[in-house]
Length: 83
Image 1 (cartoon, rainbow, N blue to C red):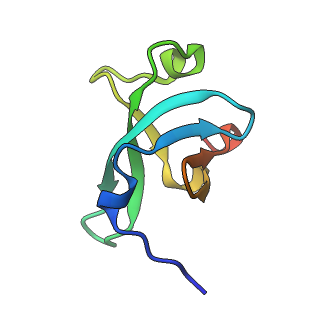
Image 2 (tube, rainbow, N blue to C red):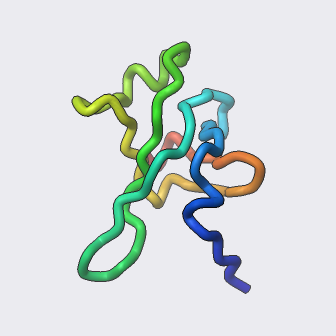
Image 3 (tube, rainbow, N blue to C red):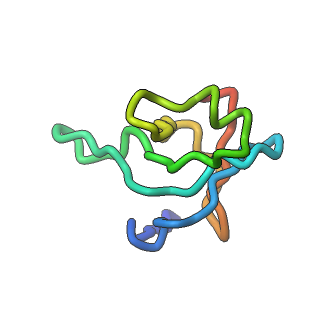
């Protein structure tokens, strides 16, 4: 059974990797205009995280592919192998 989550429920959730790196907080999502599916999630980086500093783009946010998301609960868990 698929569980649907409203996007505003995700805003502000902490994003961490499966190996314990705190990447930051969920800000927004990029959605494909053609398919309507989420392509990337945009994350405000944790300034104290060395991993977040490596992934930060020119606009200051992290773009994490949807395929990297492993779980969503009290926080968003992502797998670095799929990033």
